[in-house]
Image (cartoon, rainbow, N blue to C red):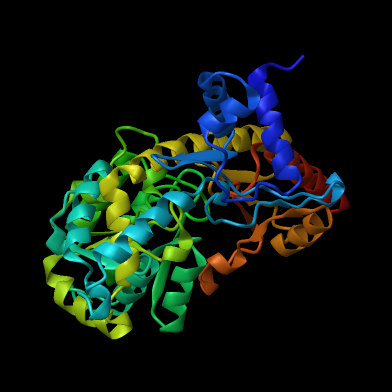
Length: 448
């Protein structure tokens, strides 16, 4: 026999199924539902708390409880796709309603600014707020050195083409790396030198050789949960890379757009080892907030501020005021910090499930990387198996994975690597999907 609070949960599910409650709808108030079921307020609170723990509903202070988007699946489980290829944030755990309140408030607070062109480097009030927020990531920088950008990719795209104080021309980049940075380099015909990222990181001896012998303008690195490998540098490795950059007059662009998800309490960014400007720090809110906002930040050295200012102005005049204002309110209210704490737990759990499944089901002949955050990992196949072939065969089994071939510079291309992300995969389906991948790999290996 069901308890009272279980009956209430069941009733909510019935209302969802028959369409009376839709994603984003406000749930009945605690008091009204207590009257309907003739029970105590505490019973309703318990029911709502249980549903909130399962991420089916969420609360908005002083507003009540709201229904999170509900996944719709076919009754035929064989037709359900397990999507390891999508690498956006888990949309079922994004703060839509909270941010809507911030947007509405921003319209009121920044209405005057919306009728005129704003500051190219970002609202001064937001830059001040970002300066405070970045301290939680061990990035200590004054607002004057912070630039608000339309996602970190805009900052990277500008920096790729700017002349640097060291007067050097070549770019050193981890291989593989994410598509958009490859496109920024390729579209400009720039000379880029790759350094292989393995499950154990990069070869620091080879990195020193490159810094010493080549005209390296900057080293581009994703220091935590690298895309696509998922690798995170240790503090010792970060410190060594910074020392090499100082020794050979090389700049570092540290793309820390996943840094908020790091649960290691003593993990520092490279920026912490040289905040003077040798390390240019960028971060994005796309993977942890709402990608559609296209908001990010860059911490720049004084010597690059003027040239970056001009390039940013030529690119878009300024980042939209309304989204900047909403982010400022969201950070100031403390909602961002609470949201990040929740996401860390979610992705850490996903990463743990993924890692266990990879160990359990992959053939011994393959090598996997990452899986710590649940966001990115790679599987390197035996050379005779092309990633494109595996992607095609898995799609027939309703499992989607990403061919990582396009994440390499042409001269360093590998065609036997796939990328996985479990950011949008239900926990209970991660093991099932990896089991299918392992089975398909074994099948392909037997054929060869």
